[in-house]
Length: 207
Image 1 (cartoon, one colour):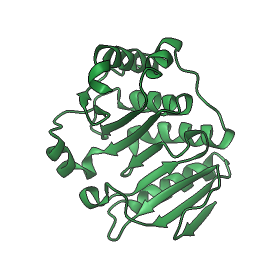
Image 2 (cartoon, rainbow, N blue to C red):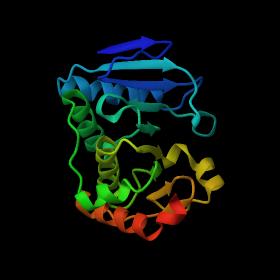
Image 3 (cartoon, helix red, strand yellow):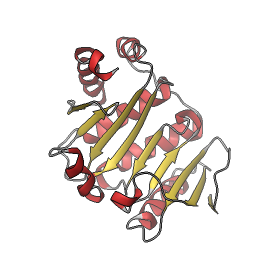
């Protein structure tokens, strides 16, 4: 179901897509989300909100925000196509069914040592194998940990932003605006383990 609106609502099982003027890939992302919702017969509410988001001026791209089990803490900037389609579909299914992921206990305990963890992930269709598994792991973590938020940014639409942040390889994660890292991602499990190792090693720096 597509609802075009000018302001946010409080409906839980919804996806909000923020679009600004002369948005480059907004149409494609709207079609992808609505197409997946229809294909999977999920019955979600998809809202298109004409409002610039904080990344818009440097990306000219849409921001897609997942509510429900993600509580607005999972966001995608840009058109998440190709390698990210399966991740988006899994996110939508979790949203529609109100499913929270189970993540490894040791990772959960590590994350609870932080008051909050804000993660930015930069990815692209040209990203080496592993980006989708890392993105899936991060989305799962968001459902399991109320102190974690994640924004996945499409690098193709954010080249200027990447230059500004000094990012030269993919995937790159930025943790709490303090630490850049590139976790392994041979599988979702591998991404969990790699992220835990990085956080444990850099706990004081990330805080």
